[in-house]
Length: 103
Image 1 (cartoon, helix red, strand yellow):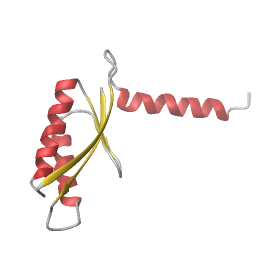
Image 2 (cartoon, one colour):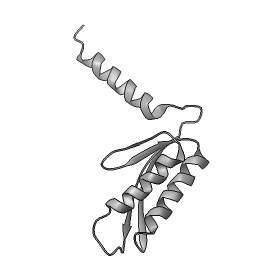
Image 3 (tube, one colour):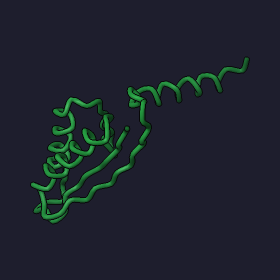
Image 4 (cartoon, one colour):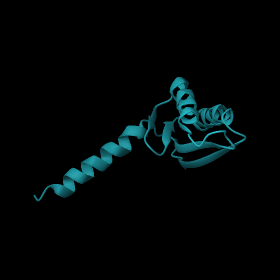
């Protein structure tokens, strides 16, 4: 499964959330699961229990920066598939190249 998620603290003494986000991303990277972080979400790949354990640990890490935590999450649950973190993008790029080819 792929899970894209975003965490943010609220009730923090400052409006800046970069330290909290860094703490969450550190948890994800230390998990050893395949992952990708962009400007909006972190996506991780693994089985249900692995992925949600990491999301919980990341939420706990963000919780240290405020009195509440906001979580946005989207999941692609596809049993029997792995490597989809990059394979989905590879298929998209192949489709883009094919649609650009006039022949």
